[in-house]
Amino acid sequence: MNPFELLSSKIDERIQNTEASLSSGSAKDYAEYRELCGVIRGLRSALMECQDLAARYKELKPIVTGK
Image 1 (tube, rainbow, N blue to C red):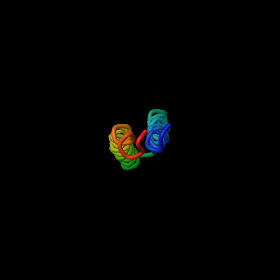
Image 2: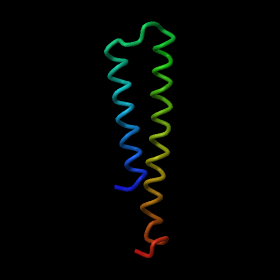
Image 3: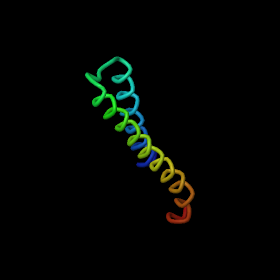
Image 4: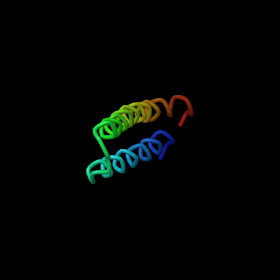
């Protein structure tokens, strides 16, 4: 597992935990609900970037390392 895949895994875990928290009714009010939704949105954006980097890393690794 490369560093990007490891980071993606951790981000995905945070998304799942935040979604579980949100679905269990942890938000005390609408403002907190919106904040948690924003956290999830940001984490999903970061996850997409990490997945893109992981794909590029796999493509470029043979060129950079010669393997």
